[in-house]
Every structure is written in C-alpha cells, then in structure tokens.
Length: 522
Image (cartoon, rainbow, N blue to C red; front, side, top):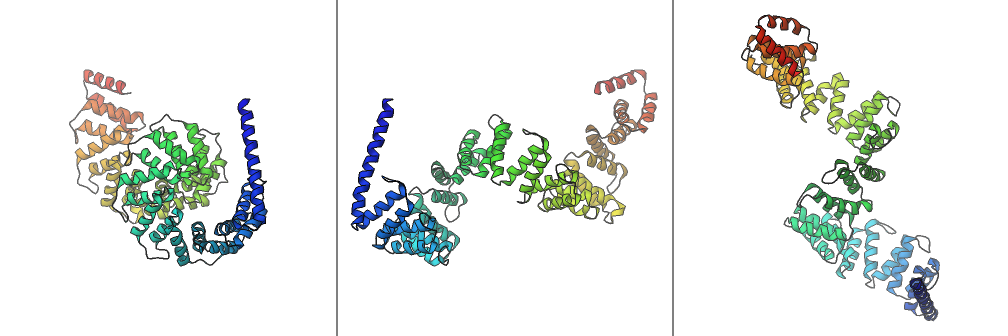
C-alpha cells in the first residue's frame, strides 16, 4: 500500500509539473515564440501535460513552421505524410520537408529522399533522392547512409559501386544501425566487394540480431541449426528462430516447426511443431501450408479433414509449391475433400512435374501413355529408381517404336544398383537369356539373388532352378529346395513340381536338412 501511494503521489506531481510546463509554454507560444509553438505542438501530439489533440498539434506546428523553424517544418511534414491531425497530403509533406531540408535538417532530408525515391507526393527522381540522402548521410544519419549504400549497390541513380556501398553500410553499421549491420554481414559472407570473412559476417549478423533484427536472427538460427560456420546447436537455433518467429518472421517459424517436428537435437514436440507450422502458414509460407495440409489429410495432431487439407494445399499450390500441387492433385484425383476432377488433378500434377517433382512426373507418366517416355525420363534423370525401371520397360517393348535394348539395360542397371527388385530381376533375366548382353549365368545368379532376398517370387524360383542345375553357381540341392519352397509359397505354380523332382534326388538325411532349413527360414 505505501508503494502504491508513493506511485500515485509521484504521478500527481508529474502531471502537475507537465500542466505547469504546458501553461508556461502556451503563454510563450501565444506571444509568437516559434520554439514554444513547436513545443506546444509536441505536447499536444504526445498528450504531455494536456489531453492528446493532433489537430491542435498541427495548428501550432504550422505557426512555428511558417516562422521558419526547421524542426516544426519537419514535424508538420510528418503529420501530413501520416494523415495525423490533418487529411493525408503527400504534396504538403514534400513542401514542408523541403523547407526543413534546405535549412540542413537531416531527418527532413532523409524523409524527402524517400519520397523522391518512391515517387510519393512528387514524381520519382532517383537523382534527387540520391542528393537528399547524401545531405543527410553527410550529417551522420544512419538511415540515409544505409539507403545510399543500397543505391550504390543496386546502381540506382548512380553507377553501381559495391565498394562504395560497403563504405556507407559500414558507417551506418558502426552507429548500430541494424539493417546496415545485416547488409555488411551479407557482403562479408558472400565476399562480394570485400574479402570473404565468415567471422566478420557472424560478428555483424550477431550485432543486428541482438538489436532484434529478425532477418539476422533467422540467419544466426539457420547457422546453428545446420552447423554452418558455427557449431551445430539446436537449442541456440531455437533461441534465434524463436526471437525472429515471435516478430512474425515466417521462415523462422517454419524452421522452428521442423526442429520440433523432427526432434533434431531437442525433445520432439509435435504440438509445438503444429503451432509454428500454423503460424507460418497463416502468414502465407507455402512450405508450412503444404505441411499443414499433410497433417489434416492424415490426421496428424489434428482431426482428419480432407477439405481443410485441400484448402491449405491450394493456398501453397497457387504460390508455386510443387509438393502442394502434387498433394492437391492427389486429393482431386481421389475426390477426397473436393469433388473428384481428374482433369484438374492432371493439371496440378503437370505444374508440379514441370518444377521437377519426382512423384508428379512418375504419376503423369503412368496416366499419359503418349507422354510416358518423356516424364519417366525426367524422373529417371533424377535417380528415381521406379522411373528408371519403367523407362527400361518402355525401351524394351516392341510396341513403343523406340526399342533400345542397350539403353534399357542401362536404366535397369541404375535402378538395380539402388536396390529396385524388379530391375534386379530384369537384369537377371537378361544375363540368363543373353538378351541385349552377353549371356552370363554368374551375373544372372547375382541379380536373381538380390531380387530374391527382397521377396521377388520369380527371382526365387529362377534362383532355385540355378542351384538345382549348378548353373552360374555350385550345385546345391538344399539351397535349391529352400528357394523353390519360398517361390511356391508365394504362388509360383511350377515350383511345386520342381520341389518334388529335387526331393526325389536327395537322400533322406539331406532332405531332412533341407526341410529343417525351410522351417527355420519360415
């Protein structure tokens, strides 16, 4: 209670002081003292010692500005630019900024430069923008120095000169101007216009990040996240992503979600991941929208809802997200959450495929016979094993008009080397029959074995036959019996008669061993 009373007394004294000061300043202002008129306007703007009143602020600023007081001219320009206490009038803002700028008032020079640069209230004129930014920059205004840096860097209103740009960025950065610190960090990081120096880059990123500049916070978070130029540290990544994410930085929110979703370096937290995915998605981050769509489609952390999934996919798809375009195509193809529309599905598959989306390319190839070769090849060139196998199949077929056994072999081999069982079996057949390659039973045995171990029934049957006959491998009736049993169990009908013939050739001891082997492997 004493603390509260003391606070009340202090507030009362402050209000009384402001009121007395207001009366003193008002008396001077009414006698025509320009500085007092300006101060009175400032009091009305801020509600200092008097109720806030923007209209009266404008009136007193105008009196002081008309008397030639540059600070009042500047503040009157601000009121016109913002439409505060007066209808917005950028032409009037330009007029009053010019009055103050010509008297050397740096803040007015800076604002005037912006209006010329943007063409607001006056025709755009990069030379005039450069002129006024230069005037303010020479007085040490860091914002103007930064803008001069940007103009030199982009060659706007002046010949492009990255080194001069860096000089201006450095001047502003050394005044603790976060945007320039970030720009300087980027130059050190890329080595553009300056010797690359990762440590200097991190130094300036950190300076800007510590001031709350979200892009710099994201950059530091990314480096800790990926272990790029800094030790990998998921907790520090979360710290910096979090600071930027709380400011609404969508990419930071998305990356936070990814960390919490994967549990990379921290305890996995699906609920927190969902929270950040939603935050980023609501800001239009396409990756987050696609991810949120997946969650609604599969009921991960939310109640399954195909319609909501389709809505999020569509938002991301319309931004060009290939993954979302493919996922939306799938829902349209199946009629999940949206009316079934195969034409629309194909249209979205095509958009995704044209961006290099593997599964979209593969699905298009399966649906469009006349384009199959084109799309299988696109996906195959990206090392997608199913597409490589299918391309081999097309090149092997007589009815395609493009039969090419040598190319077919190459694509089968690429897929087989990635562990694709159908391609491994296809290679086994080629070596077994000498189709397009020199017959090689050992190679056939190798590829049949690779496919058979993955459960390919025909490969298991052919392998059993090879063991039974000693073709490409030492004869082994126990191995033959075991592989043929697996093939038979998988539905390969000829396996049964082969097993009977092999059993007839085995003595009881060996047959018992083979049966034990089969039972043990089952």
